[in-house]
Length: 145
Image 1 (cartoon, rainbow, N blue to C red):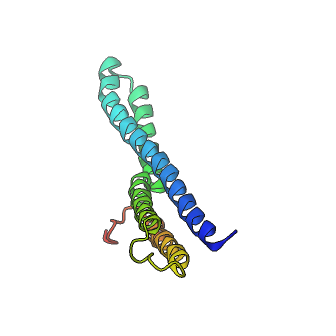
Image 2 (image 1 turned 60 degrees about the vertical axis):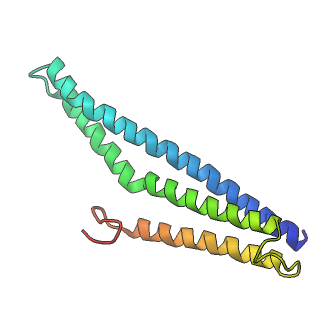
Image 3 (image 1 turned 45 degrees about the vertical axis):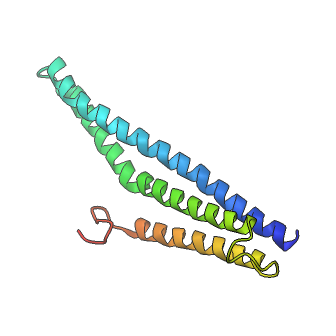
C-alpha cells in the first residue's frame, strides 16, 4: 500500500472508530441518566402505592445504586466527550490534508505529517483515558477529593 493510501486510510479508520465509539458512549450515557431519573422518581411512588411494604422501594434503590456504580466505572460521559473531541481533531486534519492546507502543502511530507498528527491525537486521547481510569472512586476530575 502506498504511503499516501496508508495515511488517509489511517485517518479515515481513526475517524470512523471515534465516531462509532462516541455514538455508543452517548447512548449509554443518555440511557443511564434517563434510567436514573425514572428510578429515582419511582422510589417515592412505590412507597406511596404500597405503604408499609418496603420491598419495591428497596429494590428500586438497589437498582439505582448499581446503575450509579456502572456510570462511575464505565465513564460514559467522559468517553463521549473525549471521543467526540478526538473525532473532530481527526476530521480537521483530514480536511487540511485533502485540501493541501498547511502543514500538508509539501507532497513529499504530507503523508508522514498526517500519520504523525493522527498518532498524536490518538495518543492524547489515550493519555486522558489513562488519567480517568486511574482515578479512585470519589475522586474529582482534577484529582481532588
